[in-house]
Image (cartoon, rainbow, N blue to C red):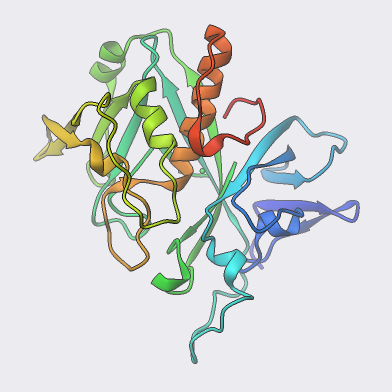
Length: 281
């Protein structure tokens, strides 16, 4: 196996995680999406996770997976003949930044349709180094997973306004096709969208019919009225690159809303992160 990026502290010693193994399951998580409190640390470029405290642990964070995680379902469903999972690979590591402006809005970007992994999804800016366990394809009904990540969500609070930050944003058009800023009200509606169900949600009359985004075209950004219904879509059961907000992003937005609630002293319902611990993303 190549150099492991994610290690679990099992039976008192660090062990690498195989590609087809569920990280949440190995840490004792139940069948649901969670989140579950996880202790983590950083050692020689590797992320070390444990269900209990250990020397060198630097944080206690919630770990979550999607309700239809293919790695949790691999042992429960027969594999089609002739299909194999990647061998000699572990679990990769990524990072996504929840960038909060002084106006208390956060930045989301839409991945281009041409990307091999998670095309056309709205996610925070980040890169391959998202704490959520992530797979692509996201469902076994789409096919066997080809990618397996643990994604760390980091909250970065800027003293600059949304307008100031936007003036300095230089998105890579080969990876980003649009971007937008979400306020707490819209973020709460997105975070509360249940995933893993095909039942459409009715739009609240208090929500705007659309959200202003900036779409990149021929090197320039132009205004785009993004329908609210697009942001509230859930992950489809069949293979299609439907534009929507990723499951992990909904989880991170819920944690961000909890942070805002603690800062202001007000209660903000984080929706899908209702069981999350009181920790920042």
